[in-house]
Length: 52
Image (cartoon, rainbow, N blue to C red; front, side, top):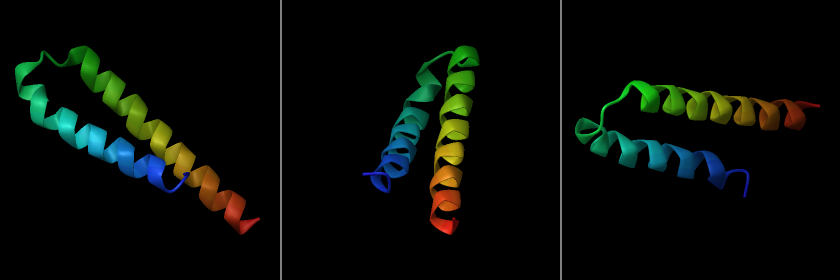
């Protein structure tokens, strides 16, 4: 499950990226940035927990 979550996040971002030309983007860019940041933190936590 932890390995699949970032993949789904990236697929969601890719799908959203295709539709973003129709949408006005100020608020959505912030949401995407938060999602990417959360995914990176999540991956980093898994990596660190594997090292310990």
